[in-house]
Image (cartoon, rainbow, N blue to C red; front, side, top):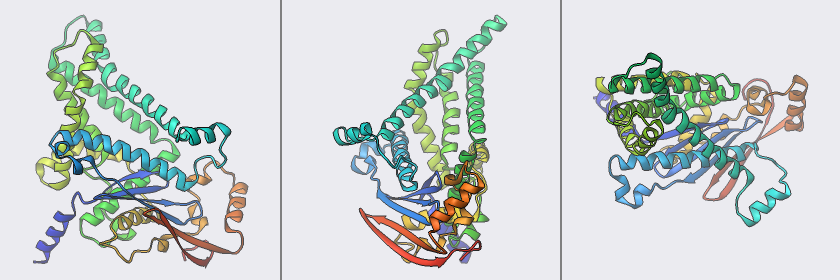
Length: 384
């Protein structure tokens, strides 16, 4: 009976919460509520909640299978950009002093310089992705044909294209994972997955329990991208254009919504069902998560747990994130200390403390109202 009850808990908790790793934090989404939990440079926890209502709730058409996958992908991008901006603001990563040009843009155009930079970066990213994943593979295939002076079978061509895409994808992820700050984001990615797995398995949400759970999850964006590549290979077989590489690239771009839709349906199905078929089909994407996730420490797991519990206040009404505040000395891996010398770190800590006593402030924003819950503790190198 207890085993059956456990299975029911696991079944009803699947697909209830999803998340995203950010710089020094985690965003969790439950229903229409999103919650961003970040670790500040002084070791405190900052929580910010927002609402994100999908257009699928308003119009049934956008909830149709395949179409909902395209909508979900676009909405995920929008939510991701918003989350990154909010996280940057909460960490103070934006410029504190605005230039005259920035003030003018904010006053007359209603936008910030960082918004413009984000838009430009997004456009450049889309162009680069098109070049690498849509245009370059058929060019390389055509080059191989010229090199060997023979025409390759269309199925072999599609397989070679797909292999090239996978190599590019893995090479990109592996290269960015070498960056220290990105590795730290990947640790928070692991913390996000572990905390969700802990919740979905019906365990009590604590860093100790989450640490025992897997950091690989079938609904991860990494798996989604890999599934899209595999679906794109299959669709590419049925595109008859091979001589004109640019035209083939445009046709493949036109089929991208179908690729997104199919990939989304599979990811959502795999997230709800655990059987031999979904395990086999999910295996490549889960393997890729060995690159995009890293084992988190307890403090990072605590942030992910703060995000989940704060996103689900009905289920965790008495949760107080301030219990996960840590001493600044325990937080020296924070991005704020990147590149600082030992002397600079000591001065930074001295200024942050402002004395022997440290004020821990848990900032909680809900519905535009900010509430500070303050407690004073003595700073030590050990945990409070």
